[in-house]
Image 1 (cartoon, rainbow, N blue to C red):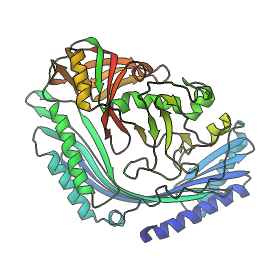
Image 2 (cartoon, helix red, strand yellow; image 1 turned 60 degrees about the vertical axis):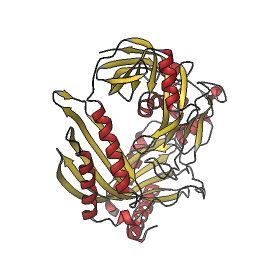
Image 3 (cartoon, rainbow, N blue to C red; image 1 turned 90 degrees about the vertical axis):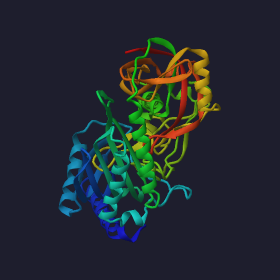
Image 4 (cartoon, rainbow, N blue to C red; image 1 turned 30 degrees about the vertical axis):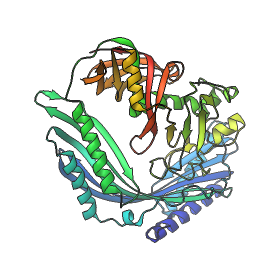
Length: 463
């Protein structure tokens, strides 16, 4: 633990222990505290000008109590003993009139594996001066505005350092620190009367030494992608092969797939699959999906979850075969299983279930090979990069606008199309209609990862 956070760590732990004690003394059978401390400095950009420099820090604590099978929760943004006591009493009062549920549970967390990430602090980031942060912001702006056709609408560069703590009355005591530089930009391309739609990206870095280079490269890539959209034309309507780039795969397909891997959905029997489907083939054999919370360069990195359960890399689907579901203690109790470390949330809310960092494994073909396959099969085809529309997680149906999509004809990229509609079905797209995955993968917004996919029987409506 970096010495710079030692006083904050002690203050957070003392406050959490008091809150836990107050909860038990107020009548709770078991209790759990989720606490955090954070300090951040942010430089905000608007219309390519520095708009605001801000700095703030604070503590937040939430208390979850169980009285029999009744649950109560309250939170506060203070370490003051009076406010902590009031939160503990309030949580117990709420539990007193809440409906009973046999699956509410608080359990003791196991020890965190030695191979898990244990130090996400970089002292150089923690102690970064506001002047250096401003210089980094200037680097980002300079790169973004090299080409006058790119119009920067807004952006931020933030340095954040924080502590996360889980403490419960059964002996769980987990704490970790994290520091990250994060930046984002929103903008569009303008050339004459041609205007692209707004686009957005964000990235993080946990190392000060690598931040400037990563910041420049990610900004350059973003601006190039936006300006490519200035070469526009019209697409045709057809039903057939479509190429989905990694961002489109994650936004359209994998995000909806996650619903059916949520343990609470399984417990409520509202998803596509159940416990009896484990070890059965549910998707194309090319699909392997892993949730990995141990990648230190990703936003979802963590060594324990919202309930203090240690996290681990987990295969959800292997070669199309369902291997397991994402479980918190509630879902695990309802399904007579053990938590997989997928409780999500913070001090101001009750735990829910969520993945950490989903990674769709690469395929066996090159990206160039997928394009060759598409052009050999069809005279023209669409390449989808972004998407704005609706996806029904239950049925798997999706329909919306393919934003910034490429139109390919006779083996060549012709131009970008603005108002082209696409529709299809998640389960068919990742089932029999999946024609190939690229060897190359891409990490999107410093989080999830995916290869490029070639999918058949997608409906395209040209605009």
